[in-house]
Length: 398
Image 1 (tube, rainbow, N blue to C red):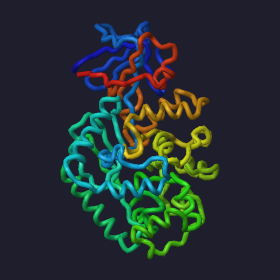
Image 2: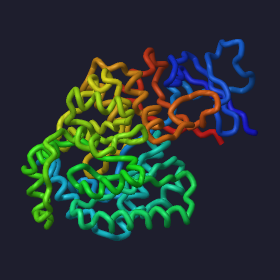
Image 3: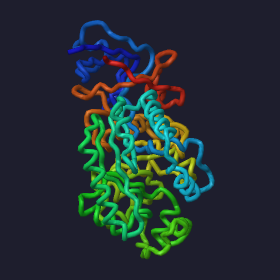
Image 4: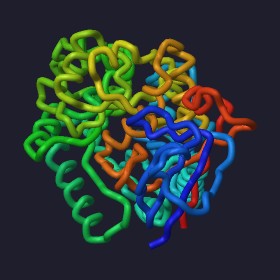
């Protein structure tokens, strides 16, 4: 079994205080020991000194859409949520080699910027092979959309067939789970069938004011979008509640669920999310770029909601580097504990995706580690990682 001792100015285990002049012993592909260099129990032998900077667990991007990578720079930002959705719908179906190349490049960019695991939303499962060939651990959410209740049964049958086909073709390091798009794009009938099946693993929820208005009143810009899509004939009795209360009433909230966005939530909604034990994937840059608002992160934390970070797609953000979202979050909320933000980008995402061997540096955990170099040893390791100047690179252990 291979043996490697890594050294750095700082080691951030995430679930413990940072270690100055830290050492990490890696045996095989697992962490065997960590602590300060001066610890009497420190392993003996040659040390690969990474230099001034911070060693930490690899990042986990808990929410992105690799299938939209070819739309980078091709959608209107700042014109409102519904116009952006319409532009994505109009452009996303364009097939061709460009789409495959864009997804492959997006995966490479994730790897190159310190991401070790990803929660990817897919409507086709068309790039499982690309993910399996990468160094990423991947949870792919097969996302269902069907507003017409007449399509509920056929949509679920199609999904079952896709899941069965994926299971027949093993893709190492890739797990496929079922997801629903959002409460304003999935019919109550399909939601009921999904709950009967055991529920879904991910859903966009409380992202925009348009979503809230549609569920409260049944009208507004989203109703107009559905009508333009030929779905104006579908009868819908708005529940008159918030998005969170609506899906909770349908039985969708559970501890293995990744709720994405949670921008439009109040105190009662935050309490529901905390009680149900869901994980909320925050997407600060996407929310900013689409003008849907800013999630109240301090209030979510105070309510006990489990938080992680995602980038969303290249149709709404400039990069798939979740560190960029962590940096924006600290600028939006300067009072946030930097350690809590680093945790969202690492252990929070690993927990949300059920990847128990990632997200922290601890004995027995996978040694999926990244390094943020610095010109000189940082005085505050968390502040350096979130400074906006740090760039992460995967640490090779082979």
